[in-house]
Image (cartoon, rainbow, N blue to C red):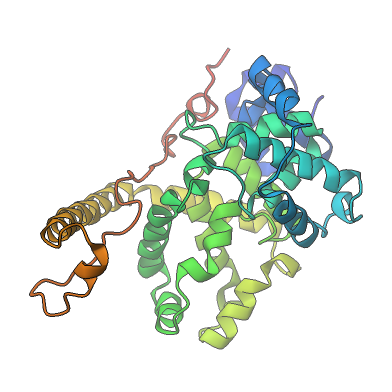
Length: 352
């Protein structure tokens, strides 16, 4: 497919591919382009096919009812899924069920239905399953959904750390207003970062965000988040009562210019890149503090005979007892393709 400038021949020119992605992938050939950008063409392997065949008709006793409820609640804004128990909802249920059985350590989480639904808009269910498993692959340090969705959401702690740091630097007044009213990023941004903005921005913009996600990887979420605050500007307001309703209704907005938004995301990603060394040092410092807390906690727990409830009851201890933050042992995942990388490096292919 020519794809409005992305043809089989032109994949040999990474510069043209990136230019086309920034300009916008035509809707009619997005499935072909995504398959190339995400590398899904390499994934229609025996492993994915065998997992599908093994689990698609297997009994599912754990999260089946929850998946059914989530599908009906989260995906009905698209015509493919609007019919209750229609073909679209059934395909989505099967993809999520098979994945939960295939990767039992991750299992199922509500936000997954939005991601799988987006894939099913462009792919049949077996290809959507292969693509979904690719996004959750541990070996792939680019898309990172597995580390986001593992029990206790380990990567979200680092993601919110980075977002808060960037907000304090670039949108300090808005950040202070939100934090001062108890509206932390965990409240308004968790679904942004879990779903990579699916169902959190207008659908055409979500598709463009996912074009960039395919190319650059998960770190694009920080640029998208800052672009939201930047592009809305005065429309966002400066008080808690105006900011929160605006953030909660982004998907329905019709006044966000698609081209300006995407251009801003690319610019913000380049701007954020200069801060990664500082952010890495700040996170390493926080992680070392967490390790110190862990050692202190273990020592105090041992002194209490291993009884955690007894340890907490020691209110007159000179040192405050605090369990270290979950996920402190995880490294912050930095971009694998910095803005200075060549187009060939960004696309993980050499110029032919």
